[in-house]
Length: 209
Image (cartoon, rainbow, N blue to C red):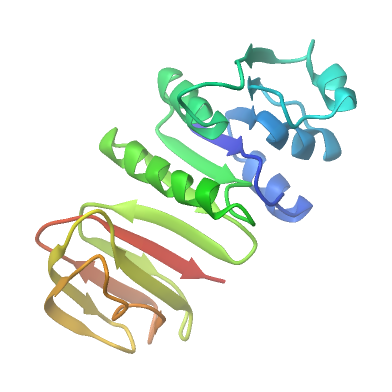
């Protein structure tokens, strides 16, 4: 089951929004993410959050047409995290997060933590915006792309041990990548496949469009 969650960051384009929601079985608006649904004339299944940044018009349009979970603005979790928890509760096995990047770096960084949270639950998750796809893995992975497509690899949380990158413009062999290292920023596909293997740790992969 695929769940698409729209957060309150920079709104996705109509093209990106419709492409992702057309594939989903569950749609969740996290607070002002509801504005994206309303603007694109799509009704989410769930409308979640403290509603502190949603217009009255949007609230009235959605309130009786979906399941509403309203929270006090003074809470322990972000609206997007509550939405992710709801998706997991519903039994989803894949989550796409839109509207989770933008001017508020603190919110964007918190959403990176949600990728890790999903990974711990064995749920495939990614953040999408107009220019990037972000996801995490604690297991070796093969990427499929096009020649000259740019990608970056980061150690998340702790050192990544024995990192090897094969099939890229800048190969790497059995390297211990620290959280503070920028060595693996802006690599490129040479052919169609890039193989990333490592012995221990968690990596954040950013694929740049």
